[in-house]
Length: 460
Ligand SMILES: [Zn+2]
Image (cartoon, rainbow, N blue to C red; front, top):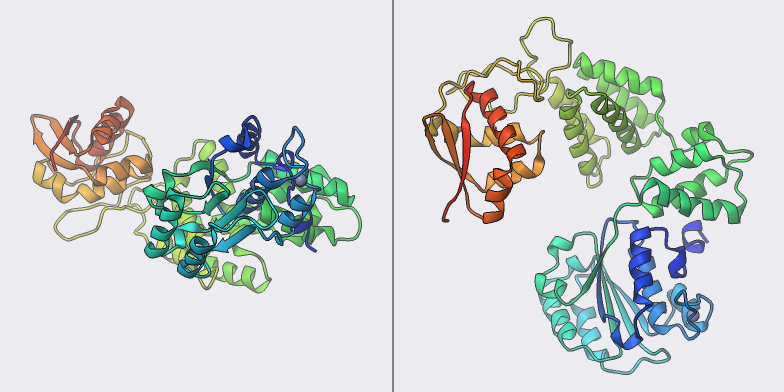
């Protein structure tokens, strides 16, 4: 049996996710009758949702609860942990869109539980249910029998209908922090007597993107190593990238040398290295640069992060990174003489023939930059370049760019740009002085004019 199964937390106190543990502990102060009968667990994969769902099932059905919650030892607790408890049903909505299961659930739900106090339904990836299945589920949630409890789990809560959400108590599972991961790993290290040092554990925890499941799997992988496990061993075993490779990679990026970069990727793949881990190492390097005040790294962070997200769904893992490299290297370099090679970022303004456009120097709030030559600011110009304006804002504030997408320029007159937002909270967000400052700066950068910005509420 794998570490992950053996060392799955079995009782509330073993849950390493602090926020979740505390919310579940707070349930202990309630009488069973007062407990909610529907929960919605949201959060990324590997964050421990299913594990926590089983612990909640024990909370309801444990026959020998202690003041800390379920005992983890009675017949109910043990069979729930093994996934063979007749009254705890786990449905995976991702593998079958659920309509038959939900129908069966509806038919069977009124029957009394076979051995336990409560019938417990865990529906994983609930957002994958068909509309029909959701409707069936909703009916059940509206009038559940007193003995039924639901835990709906999802990685994508936005796809869960509001009618379902409103009937659930929501608990959100964030990605595990380094401290939480370390705690989870230490528990196993102690019990398995694995000779691993702290630096190695830290490195392990840092390379799994906040997933308990991945962290434990990696630990199991390195535990097969004979002898003491230090950071060096971990680095080799889990194919972490060599510092010198990363340095060379960034040097080639600065030169925009796609040929070298692509052949480096090819080598890494041929050596069986995990490209995702390589990309995370690159991002870490960029993060250090960003924190050291190098705002040029922003553009690459954005592109690499996009590539990372795509890697998870790409049939060829390295392809999204290769694409980013090709795109990045084919960007027109800045004309500004004397600039360090490669420090230029992509001009996000579409190079359409109707506007004169000089590739711009690195993005950033540097106000010493020469204005772009989009010409005098008029309402027509701003409307025409609204999308470019939003693109330009993105590096500063992604959510602001989102808000602006549903707003529009209304008037440009006497040095005042009026922007129309269509929701009061959009107007309020854009009216914040920090936000306005950025809007003003980006307008200046694009059109070379210092203007004032007014936000008004428009009618759709
Ligand atoms: Zn028990």
